Length: 210
Image (cartoon, rainbow, N blue to C red):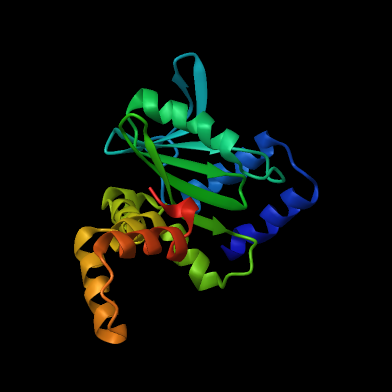
């Protein structure tokens, strides 16, 4: 992290192009995250006439795509849709976006439609402590992918996401428990439909509901 902070800051300061950003990212993937340049990484991976910037292979199995943008460009949903297309066509679960400074890892669950979850985001030049950044980046290492630790992180994030918790709170067993506790505390005997409506419409924010 300390070794790459200055070169990265210099790239950002001079608004370096995407090619120069890739040079730094390649070195960071190899020297910082433990990938072998020749065994684990493949560049310009062709997917139906398009080319992904990097593919990551673990034990010769393609496990993730990386899409790189110039260091001064803010990552957005357009970039995510681009790498998502590669992942869908190749049946790959993990997608990584990076401009050298910000690293985002997304998990894709196949289906109609596919479900995309942000599992990790690390800003190398952000205000977080060095230890916090290192802990986050560990999940992007070769060792982490080999041990499927990214999968564990995604499952934990998905299980405790606002949408998942909202579904639990609106489940029949929880609504019934709330109804009983409400009656105990207030002596008001609300029915389950009334409690469900109040939780859905007045307690939980509409945008997180399934």
